[in-house]
Image 1 (cartoon, each protein chain N blue to C red):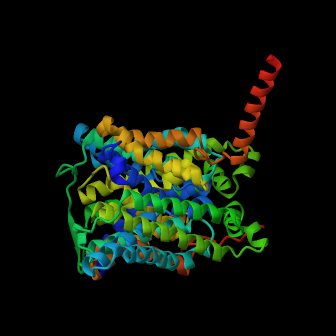
Image 2: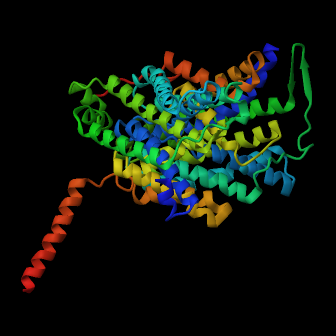
Image 3: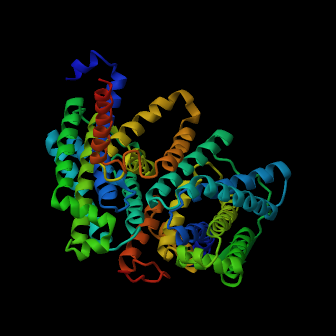
Length: 291
Length: 300
C-alpha cells in the first residue's frame, strides 16, 4: 500500500514538478506569479489530444508537438501581455496574467465545449509490471522517465550553456545583467518558452494518465504547481522539482490514509505548515535583507 | 427606501446596486490589505465564506438575530485572518499570496464536507434581511471610517509599509503589528460582506467562494487604483456591472473580460485612479479655470 502510493505520488508529483518549473523560472527572473501558466499546461494537453485524434501520432510525437506549440504560445503571451508592463507595479502584471488565464480557458471552452474529453483508448498499450508489493504500469515508467529526462535536460541547459548562464545572471540581478550586455528581453522570452514547453509535456502526460482533458483543468493544476514551487523555494529550479515530488507523494499518501474528500485541502495544508517552519522553502536560500 | 427606488428602476437594477454595495465593502477590505499595506492576499473569498457560513448557520440553526449574526460573521473572519496573518505576515514577500490561496481552498473543502454547512448542497432558506438601505448605509459608514483611518497617523504607517518596509521599520513603525491589524480589519470587512451576501441571496454554497471570486476582488482593487478609496469604488462598480453589460456577447463574455483586464492594465498600469491625486485634480481644475478667466478678461 505505502510503496504503491509512493509510485503513484511520484507520477503525479513529476507532473506538478514540470509545471512548477515554469513558475519558478519566471518568478526567479521577473518576480511575476504567472497565473496563465496553468492554462498553458491545459493547452498542451489539448494540442496533444488534437494531434492524436487528427494525425494518429504516437505519444512521443504528441508530447513534442504540444511542447512546440506551447513554446510559441508562451512567447506570444509574454510579448503581448507582460512585456508592456515591465517596470510597472508587480500587481498590474499579475492582473494581466489573470486576464490571460481567463481568456485562454474561455477560448478553449469556446473551441471544445466545457465537457471532459479523453484520449482515445488504445493510443498507448499499457502493460503492468508486478514487482512483488507494488504494481507499476508502463505508462507510469514513461512519465517518470520523460519527466526525469526533461528535468535533466533543463538542468544541463541552465548550468552549461551560454543562454543558461544568461538566465542565471538575469535571475540574480536584471539590471546588472543588462549592463553586462545580455539581451534581457530575449532571455525572458526564452525562459517563457522553456517553461511553457515543460508545462505542455506535463499536460499531455497527465491527460493520458488520468484519461481526462478539460478546459478548466489548468486552474487547480496551476495552483498546486505554484504551491509546489513555493514549497521547494520559489526561484530555485531544483527546489521546484523537489517541491513537486514531495507535494505529489504527500497528497497521494494523504488520500490513501486520511480521506479523499479532503484531497485538495491536504496539499495546501502541507504547504502552509511547511512555510511556517521553513519560510524560504525546502531548497530556497534564505535571503538577507538589503538595507 | 427600496419602494422609493423601485419607482425609478426595475428590480434587476436594484439587485445589481445592492451587489455593488456588498462588493464595495469586500473590495475596501482587500484594498486595506493589498492596496494600502501592499500585502498580496489572494484568498479574500475564503474569509467571505467564513462570514457567510457563520452568519447563515447562526441564524438557521440557532435562530440568532441578524445583527448578532452580522457581528459574529465579521469577528469570525477577522479571527481567521489573525490566525493566518500572525505567522505569515512576519515574513516579507509573496508568502501571504500562497498561504491565503491555500487557506481559502482549505476553507472551501471543509465547508464542502461539513454536515452543519450542508456539504455540497450549501445552505438555503437564509432569512433575507439584507436590503438596499442597510447595505448602502454600511457602505457610507465604512467609507467614512476607512477614509479617516487612511488620513490618520496609523494610516500613513500602513502606506509606508507598502512603499518601503525597511524604511518604515527604521522610522519606528512596528511593521508586523500594523500588517496584522490591517489584515484583521480587511478580513473583518470580508466577513461582514459575506454575511450581507448570504442574507441577500438566501442561498450559499461552497462554489460561490472559489478562487475566481478572490481574483475578482483583487481585480477590483488593482483596476481601480491601489490604495485609493475612490479608485476601489470605481473599480468595483465597473467590474460588477461589466459582466452584466457583456451579457449581449453571451458565450464570449469571459473572453472579453479577460482581454479587457490585460488591455486596461497595459494602458493604465497603476489602475484607473491609482496615480491620480486629489491635489493634482484641484490644481488642474484651478489652471483650467484660471485660463478661462484670463481669456475672458482679455476678451473684454
